[in-house]
Length: 427
Image (cartoon, rainbow, N blue to C red):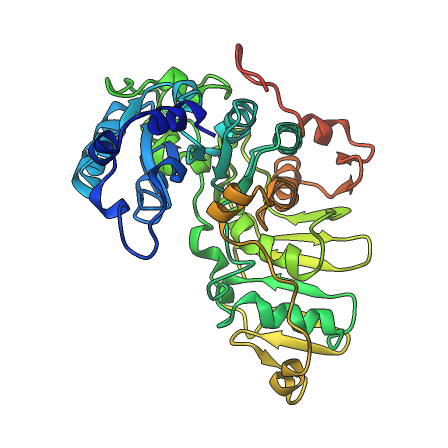
């Protein structure tokens, strides 16, 4: 991790150290030696990569580099770095230059999802640790390649959705820990059905859909559109394909399903104990999807081999009555952790807490212990949203083998697992 940089720092005198390290790094109870301070670079600084949550630099990890194919985004990020940190960030146009920068320890991938797989694999092979935005990958096959590359190269990976281990879970008025205790206790019975409905806020980004028959437009002078497309099929430029509205096109993402879907379903995967497997049946209730533009849908139902289900409710369910979030043969849980089992909180207080999780990514980078939402678990929850996307695009029920990670007896569906990339891009 940045050995060239650290060797330089050790060789340099103390006076040199004080000239290159901001004053806020030195001193204070949380002081970390400059030679041990981690560094990061962000690829994609047009939206979430430039947000206050991610565009940070502190004593534990210093932001040193940014990359974007849009010159306006890149210039804004450099200016923001100067304003916030009093620091000149290294600016790159091509992501490979950032990945191979010896001063970068951690690569944060905040691009559209059609780039996630390629960039994560190349970062792993370059010896970098990886922080990746959701969905982890646009296809199931790309996710498999990321898992392989991270494992083969001994890297630390974090998928950036955190509701399985902290913060109030969407619409439920609680973190996942009490829900996990309740499910593990068996008090609700088995199998369970989890319904993710408008009552929990899932439809917040539901209408992130594409537009059909887009008219070609001139490419902005500041945007390298060919590099923005990268492995995606060539389509004439239209502003609605890029930046904030790219999620509405199958070539780059899968609308609100794949964006918010992984946020909502990853904690459910953890709650149900499904981190190492996938559903065996995916059913959709939806109009036929356009081959280019993502459309709306009504319901997606995932069924596991033990009968557990995850149900996503979309259009047409927003105004329906009270819906249980989790239900089993012996009880139900509603929004606000309202449970049909009497005296549930006192009963849970007598039960053991869930197993502790490694939720500090920077500590994991230092200790080389796997982060709780690592490449394998992230791939399984990314597979959930990609299974739904495959079923929507084909508009039929699909059967899936969690072991081989292939669809059963369905060549058309399997072609969506490993989709061709535009030359010369490949994993």
